Length: 144
Image (cartoon, rainbow, N blue to C red):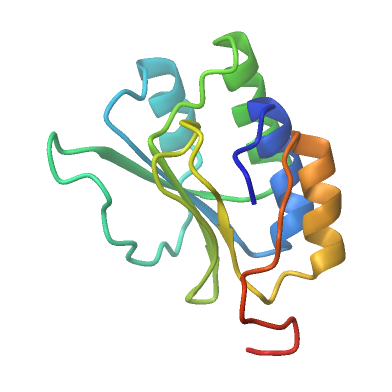
């Protein structure tokens, strides 16, 4: 999918897209103290290893449950900062599987989604966040 144009809506809409039990991983070298404090207070109890995307300078990394309450707060923080995304890289995972990954997030790069997310859910998500999507060429929704 194309990069979302509405950062707070991206965070607020994630729980509906990725479902219960998902974890949001944020990585960044410019996460301010307020956002870092918010994320630190909401660390996921059973984080999985996600390979860092930034080698230097060493980034801050946070694993937060992708719940409505947690992500609504993150969206509010982002909105208060003028839509600043708070992170350089975004990943969402559940049960050892990546559901969403976005390298160089909020810089115009595409967001990659797992085929296990229903196309209708992706379409609705894209509409809410100001994005568009196309299925990955050569794949079908039925493949796993």
